[in-house]
Image: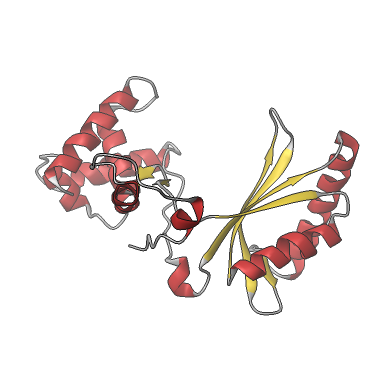
Length: 223
């Protein structure tokens, strides 16, 4: 972790410690692990001016015991795995009665799928598959389901949205969104994407470029 990043992380930890129920040290360790889960206790100890990694390990064990750290996981490179399309589907119903029926049907279908297939929702498509990541049931200004997932192609995501979902939930209205890029992901600003977009919009130069949404869509943003 670069010195400047460390200073900013300490600043963020201090700000959060003033409004949530964790002290600055625990928050700094959590943020560091969120930024790079491969960082070792000894590396964190050097950053934090501790004698060794035992103190860091103590903080981590305490947070696990108290349920602050729920689990450790990884972040796959989905594109290299062959699931390059990241999609979001907004699913709405025309009224509350239809929504309740859709919700009841969804619970029944997921329960059957889980007993027969397993704990992950993998839906085969003609040319590939769709793997669901999150399904949110949202209440607020609108009541809807939000489905996030990965697909082997934009076409497979479209077939899942427009054909698969609509056939199984006849009264559902779906809107498919294909994610092009993230400026913020998993709580951290994507510096590479921001730099590319600054170049695209020529933010450091006088005048405004004549650009279109199509130009932005075609912009290569891979790291």
